[in-house]
Length: 452
Image 1 (cartoon, rainbow, N blue to C red):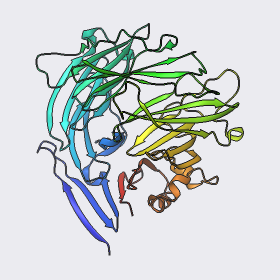
Image 2 (image 1 turned 30 degrees about the vertical axis):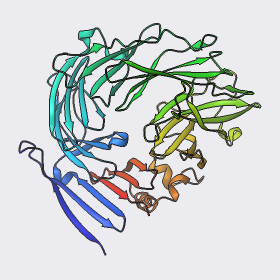
Image 3 (image 1 turned 45 degrees about the horizontal axis):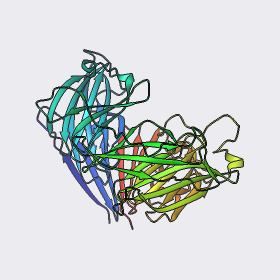
Image 4 (image 1 turned 180 degrees about the vertical axis):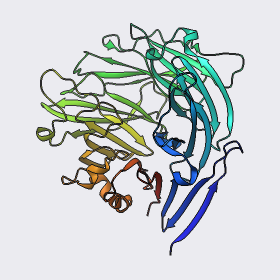
C-alpha cells in the first residue's frame, strides 16, 4: 500500500515569501522527499555536505547560477538544511556577493560570504533561526586568504584559522562567536612543550588535528628520515577550550622491523564515536606494497597510547592498476581515512586532484575490531558516484553499491539523461541516503532507506 503525505515547510519569516512543496512517500522502509523548483520558484545550484551534521541545498531564482562576485553584485540565496536521516530540516536565506562556505558543529551552522579578506557571516541553529550576523576582516590582523591552510568551526563555537609561516610553524587565529569583549580575530597564545621525545628523529611541524567538546588536539610526527622512514612516531597535545595544555601523549613507532613508509606522510584521524586514533599509511615490506591501518586508544594512565589492533592489507592488482607506482621518482599520497561511526573507510587512490574527486581506488572498510568488511578495486568511495559510470559498469567497479537498497532506485536513473547523484551515505548501522538531482525537470530527490 502506498501512502502519500504532503508537507509544507513554513518560511522562517513572512519576508521569505515562498512555500516549499515537499512530498514524502513511504514504501516499507523507504522515505522519499522532493524539492520541486516549479513549486518553490527557485533552482538548486549547490550541494554542501556537512558530514555527520547533515547537508545543505543552495537555491536561488535563476535557472543558471548567475551570482556575481563583489560589492553590489549579490543575490538572495535560500538554503534548505536536512539531517542525513531527513528527520530534521530547516530553511533560511542570506544575501551573498562572494565565495560561499558553510561550517557546522553540533549546535550551529555558520555561513560565510567572503569578499576578498572580508567575511560576511550568519550563524543559525538547526531550526533555521538566525542567532546573529556579523562582518569581520582578516586583513585587520595582517592575513590574506591565501595564507590560510584550513578553517574550522570548533565544538566551542569559535572559528579557527590555521596559518603556517615560512618556517612551517603553526599559528592559530580564533574568532569567538559569542564573546562580546574580543572583537575580530586574534592569535591564540598556546604553549608548545619544550620537551622533545623524538631527540634522534627528524621532527615535523605541529598540525591542528581536530576538536570535540572536551579538547583541542594538535599533533606532529617524528621520523628517522624524510622519505621512506623505518621509524614513524607521533607526539599529541591536548588543550582545553581556552587552549591551556592539559596533557601530552605519544604513539610509538607504527612500523615494525622490515617495514618502511612509502611516501612522506601517513594519515592520522580521531574517531569521535569510538574515541580512538586511526592511522593509515602506505608501506613497503618484502619489496611489496601494503596499506597499514592502526587503531590506538586511551586505555590507561600511560603517556603512550595503547595499540588496539594493527592491519597490514596488500595492495591488490597493483601490476594492473598501478595504485602504487615504483617509477623511482614519484611519492604516493597517503590513503584517505574516514570514520563512519564504528566503521573505518580507507581509500588508496591511483590519482586525484582533490579528495572529493571520484577516482579509481582500493576501497577498504573495517569494523571497530579491525575485521575486514570490504576490500575491492572501485570507482569512488561510499559517498561518491558517477552515475554514467555506474550505469555501464562492465568491470564491477561499483560492487559496494550493488548489494545496497538504493541499487534499484539508481537503476531507473540510468535511463534518464541529465540526472546526477549529489550524495550517497551508508551508515555503520545500515541506513542509506541517496540524493539525486534531475536537471531536466529541476527536481532534487532525497531517498532514505532504513536498515532491514
